Length: 308
Image 1 (cartoon, one colour):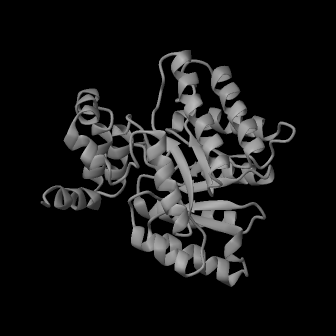
Image 2 (tube, one colour; image 1 turned 45 degrees about the vertical axis):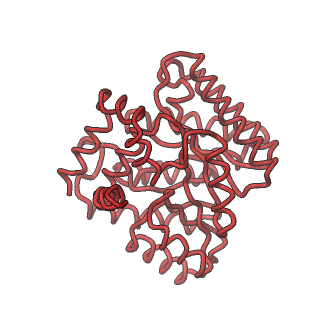
């Protein structure tokens, strides 16, 4: 499984395959399992359907590492449209944003300015901005930007971020974010990281995920536990039950198209669920990382592709 995971992560960076996949009919068909569609309206339609099932959503316009300031502002405009639509349609939704899509690779100042503008817009619209986490080389600058925006007058509680349990540094990062009252989405992590910065063994990642999830549950801040791993879910539910933590104080989060049965089961059992809904034409890197995270998805896709 580790070899298959590494192979898919390597494929996620292959530009030739990306160009072919994103332009081909078969690629679009395959991606539809995990990607809500190509356009804003596709994502909003799926969000409304998911809300009707009693689940919140987080909307993500796919794309990374823009190469010009103009591209960064165009990407930001999509998010401004989403924020307006969330308010207009009264969706139970927020947005998830990657800073490299907002120009971080060009200038920290550009990315921070765009992220702050989005956060101010979200505050006025009554929603929330989640700054997504990318590879470990960007962890510190991402956290710095989130902390500065969160400290701005009136923006406290309107911006949050993501912590990846496979990084050694994550417990210290969680402690700092909790001290400042910043909302966290905890995930295991989906990038290929060197052993110098990340736990190489799955067992160690799982143990750290459980440790960090207990820290989040024990805090007064509302957090999200992003996992499809039933063992991690059981550990969180057990800790919450033992410590009298009501299910309204946190939420589970899962990806669109993954473990839909488990999503519905958690809602039936009275837990809060948020579905992460990605959309857009630049779907290939995201799609390959989903296959890397859960190679069983490969066989599922192959079976469905062969259906008449």
